[in-house]
Length: 559
Image (cartoon, rainbow, N blue to C red; front, side, top):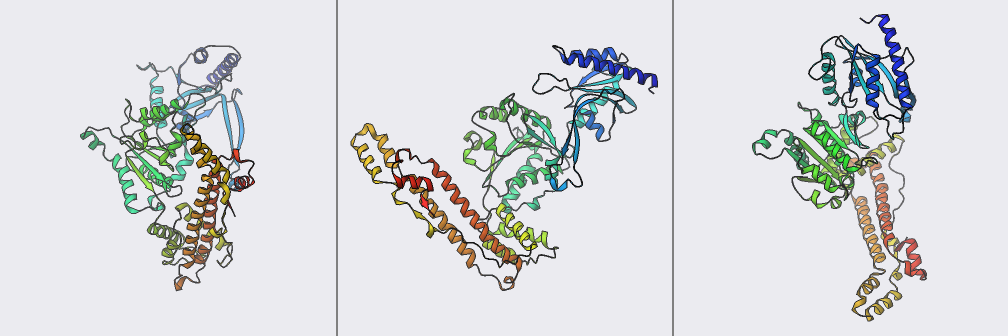
């Protein structure tokens, strides 16, 4: 039992320690740790002083989950922190939850209780010239027992062991690596918790193969050992954006977490680090993964993460001297061709590749049934079973992302009273495209002949002169081909005959109407991409040719 006299002495000691702390912050010293430890030992002769790693041993988090109590001691007004009120980032939630106060602690003293033992716990962050302030954590335990071989009081040793084990586990969180450090994200956990493979529409054989590949790995440790091969594996998910790569990763994370031998997920957002460099960041990523193994290590947009500068270091961590047993890496990319062949083509790094293509008719119909199941109990929407196959028929070329947008905008239109009878603006047609024929001009031909007449030494000039103007024409041809394909697609949608029982169905009518709008958006995206690519054409020597200037300004076509 701590008496009032002891409390007064503790308050005085805290005040003296605060004075030492403030004095230290104003002086030029060499070792902050030594100065603070010495001061605490002098002020608290009846306590053992132990400095701890606050990231690996989260005493406050342990207490926040009700495994201990941690009470701020501020009667002597020693608590110092930078306080701010953080607005709820979601505006629509602010009426009921406007935000929370958040503090950056500079100096704090706590009474920490665990298993009938009361400790003192200090958090201090000296304010100095460092770019990132260094935090220091001290646990003070009563001198009631002899020290253990680890030079700790028995109660402190038991507490630190329990807290360290707890701190290195995930508690409704996912590890996220960003800004050169690992953080625990409750938000990412929430976004994946309710995700299941029922939410993922893929070709059945591919879905089953991916699930078996990943879960089979974590079930096969003994087989790997039996055949004396490293228990590690890598998988790449690649293909066009919007076709299920991200939701597949979320479903894997959720399913692995709910196994009997819960498998944690580690998500890598970036290797960028202004202070230590990306090599240090890569080292920290694999160091944590090895500690957490068996685990799922996720690299989203792998082609952007691993650059030419970091490739060799990344590969060394993947299959160097360090053991990566129990680590299954998943990398996703929209641009498989941009990955270095050493990553893309060599097994034992990323062994399997799964291609996410545009969904076929069966997958589009399955996705429509997925939405039908969600809407079956909604009185506003009549969604007949045979509408699923019809929707799949008229959405050829749609990604899952565009299919999702189609259903969302359809439901919004219906909710606002739309019936699907409103007119739809016409999209650009190939007939409206006029190619400018003079992009390759007579001047170009003359220059080509001149270059050829100057002999073999000018072969490079001849090639450049010959190719001048070809790129604009090629872009115009590409545009016409794209628009012709779009016209055929729109005509195919218009010619699909509605089943008799769907002709008055509002959902189907609105979907058909919105498909036309989304097809127009797709066409515009195609045109925009071609116009942007046209910027690579060099017309700097043709500034005096008005027809070339016109083509350069408006692109190789006029609409």
